[in-house]
Structures are given as structure tokens and as C-alpha cells.
Image 1 (cartoon, one colour):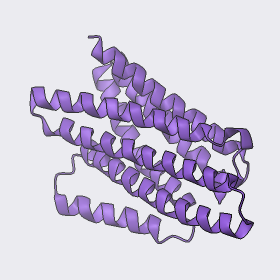
Image 2 (tube, rainbow, N blue to C red):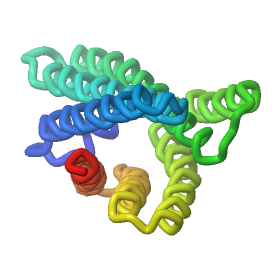
Image 3 (cartoon, rainbow, N blue to C red):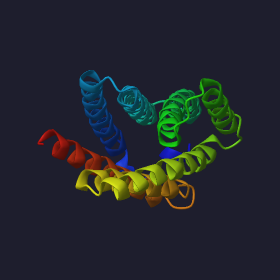
Amino acid sequence: MVIVANSPQWFLGVDSALEILFFLISIAIALFSFKIYCYTSKKRYLFFNLAFVLMAFSFLARSLTNYLVYGAIQKDISVAAKLAAVSNVYDVGFLIHILLMLTAYMILIALSLNIRDVRTLALLFLLVVLATVISTNIYTIYYIVSAILLSFILTHFYYNAVTKSSLSAWGVFSAFAVLLLSQGIFLFVQLNRYMYLLGHAFQALAYLILLVVFVMVLRR
């Protein structure tokens, strides 16, 4: 198991706590987006809400998976039994995580590129998911695909920041830039166990920036 084997021992459990934090921040942003939708009736805010709801539950699934995996490792049972329990839990949990997250990214891609045709979006989604799921190394391919999708999303937020020239717009751009960087770092987890820690650190920074932007907008 890549995540368990290549994570510093003292960090086991901390990652689950961070993912709960990401879950809460994503839920807060989703609720705020839904509130804006209720006031404006603009569907893009409804889809933005849906994207962050999916992100939130993706992180929740990942957090629970890691928690269950670490619990199985600490049990006083045979190594074979531990490996079997960990493998099953991790495979299911990580699959749920990537499906929810990739769906969220595809919704943001549709908003960024103004893709209105449902068939086109469905085709792109199926290609992305199939390319990831049927891969022999799902972990690596998932982060490569995520980085590619985030690159397109980041381009949209960059043009949005340049156009609006507001602090909140640049904040959102910065958050997704850091998030993109974190996906790149996760690719090297198999080379160095501290890459897992560093990836989570940048991911935490990205979501904290989003939280700051969220608070700034609420205070207006």
C-alpha cells in the first residue's frame, strides 16, 4: 500500500484529520454557492455547489478509508490478515474518492470551458474515468489526470482574476495553483515518503486560502 508504506509513521492519522478539514471547507463553500444560486437563480452557482459537495464527500471517503486502514494495521492479527483487510478497504475507499473527485473536476471543467452539450461532457467524463480506473497504476494515473484537469481549471481562474482584478479572484486562482502543485507532489510519493506529507501540506494551504477567500466574501 503506497500511502501507508510511504508515509512517516507520526503522520498516520494526521492526514485523516486534514481531509476532514478539507471536507468542512468544501461543504462551507458549497453551501455559500447554493445560497448565491437561490438569490440569483444562475445555474453556474448550482453546478459550483455540486462540484464542491462532491469534493467534500470525496475527502470524507478518503479520510474514513485512511482511518480504517490505520486501525487494521494496529490490530494484533497476522500480517496476511492485515494485508487482506487493508487492501480491500483501501481499494474501495480510494476508488470512491477518485470517482467523486474526478466528477467534481469535470463539472468545473464544464463551467470553465462553457461546455453545454451533455453528450460531450458525458463522453469526456467516461474517457477520464476509464483511463484512470482501468490503469495498472490507478494511484499515479489519477494524480496525472487530476493535474491535467486542474491545469485547464486554473487557466479559467487566471483569466477570471485578470478580468476582475479583485483580491478574492486572485485568491481563488492562488488556491487552485497550490492545489495543482500538490497533485504534482503526490506523484512522487513512491520515491520519498515525505512527499506524502508535503503533498498534504500544500493541499492544506490551498484549502486554507479558499477558506480565507470564503470569509472575505462573507464579510462584504
